[in-house]
Length: 141
Image (cartoon, helix red, strand yellow):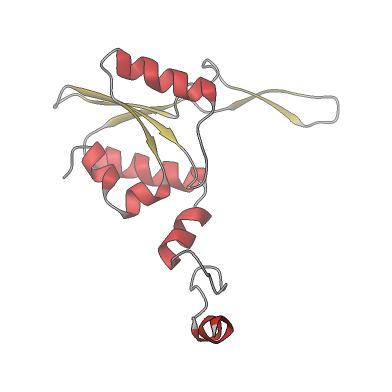
C-alpha cells in the first residue's frame, strides 16, 4: 500500500523528488544558500529603515599556487549582520544559517554576549522568512 501512495505523490516542484517526509516548502528552505538568505534579509531590513553592516571575508593575499587566502577582520564567531534603526533607537544582531545549519560554539558565545548586554541577537534561517518570523524580528509585524 505504501508503494502505491508514493506513486501517487507528485514530484516536488523545487527539486523533482517525491519527498516522503518533508513538504515542498521545507525543500525550498533547505535549498536556499546562506548568501541568498543574507541578500533577502538585508534587502528587507534596508527597505524598512535599518542600517546594516556585514563583516565579510576578504582576500588578503594569494598562496604559491595562486589560490586566494581569505581573512575576516572580526573575531571568530562574530555574527553576520549588525543592524541599527536610528528612528526607533534599536540595535539588532543576526547570525544567518542554512535551514539545517547550526551555529558553532563561538557564534553561540557572541549571540549570548550581545543578548546579555541588552542587544537582541538572533539566529535566522530561510523558514523564518517564509513563515514571517523575520518581519516580527525586524518590527514590521
